Image (cartoon, rainbow, N blue to C red; front, top):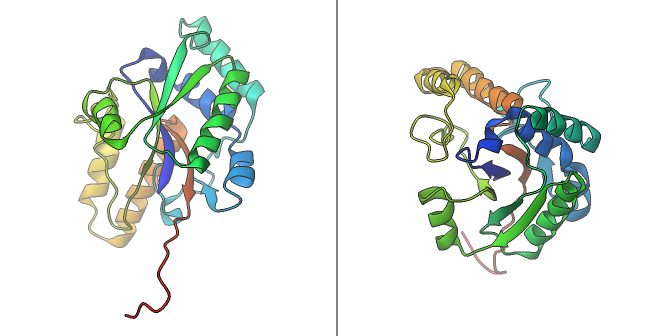
Length: 219
């Protein structure tokens, strides 16, 4: 599962690549992975949770608040200012680890002059707010995939969040048209590379999931 900030492009601020990249540089992903996850998650360059599809030379947006502030200042000069208003950072996660993650994110963003308000809501209400009505600012969520399938409707014409990028139509079409393993891998890697370069969403990490089985269970 890849965890990310899903931006709502119906809010004009997220349409500016500099703002999205500022979020990436402004959140201390390394310390979250080290101190909150305790090494049970790894930084991801895009939505794809499989390293086999991660491009070489991807930008992992190392923590650089000075660079984040500079990007925000550039955007502000062009009329995009997200410093001042309060933004709801919604999530359906309610576990303590996720609350700790959002606490760090809130502090990091506050250091950039961005007021993020963590909003913990139940799954059903969250789905209405985010996936059905698209009435949100940005949200912390997870998304999974399989080695032979990754959902792409978030990025193409049917997405509900206002993303309008014809490059995604081409990248997805190339991936869906691939008949060989090599062609599919190359096309899916190209999709990841573009997500990484554009910071379409703020892609953070892939976490390790654990299961528990009662002693004595057989087969």
